Image (cartoon, rainbow, N blue to C red; front, side, top):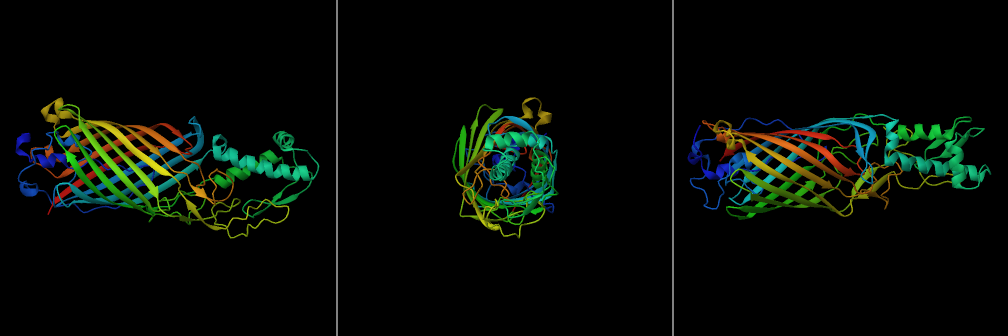
Length: 449
């Protein structure tokens, strides 16, 4: 095993593993980079560099000058129905997920303190399934059901069948059915015939469940990230870096129907990212990364039919007399008001503390969090039956994860490769229709110009 003194200290500080959030991700295979040589690192390192093993790299670290890093992530997100209600209660929401994303991230060190980076994500698999019975536990189901009940109650009151919503709701729950066929216009403007003798509660259940039933989601490029990271402070104990990130809406969003998952967020977002680390001891480093995102302007979104949720709406939703059409346009704009806060806190260690033979291995434990913005269409934030995907209130997700790292720079014959494996499981959340377990394998390759 090569002694650590033979390695330029700066190489021990190269970057932290890539963090892919949510279930979006990215993709591309990269050619193998040329092998690094002994002169690939600066001849000498700053005396302020901390002698931490590379396997426990500080969060604030940046790349050495003229060094390029390629990160190739492979991310999978799976869920068998786990979800969180708006009050934070964990439920079986009836939606299962199987999503795979890959991608390519390129970073370049302009100086010892400044690094430029770009992430190109690519979703290669985007599958959702639904258990219609358990889907009843979702808040979106409850709100849509109530809206349809109110519409049916208005018809019943108009015809003198009941006198108020409470009385009508009770009759519907007990299985009331109209004695004759009745034509109504849904909020999207679509005509619906309510058949005679069919209990309204059954009809509403099928209507809501069918409107939400998923099919294969979109695949392809996600939202591209462009950013700069500047490490302004670093000493033997701690370090801090500030980053600026632009999330470019290159993923599919506007034309994606209610039955599918998008590959992007549909709107440009600007982020400020703080990366802080603290050396707890010679064997442990704690880190904290926090991002604040703000959506710029508005995005575009198209309406989906409720009776055929794989089709975009082309129906005039102007409210006619006696209908429940809401009059919203089929092509609309949406906003993400407020601030999105996300990040993680982790503690890393090198396994060299157990044996010199394990010098190239390290591990970590991580707590992650994501407090997302609302999605507002025409000033609406409630999950209602309006045919617009994503009109929801704020959501949140908290996870607990473990990670392992292999560091090729710690081998006797050094290789410029680093591989990280992370698994993150949800431990808390709110207003999340799907709470998935995320597995990520990130391969990092280095090249010195």
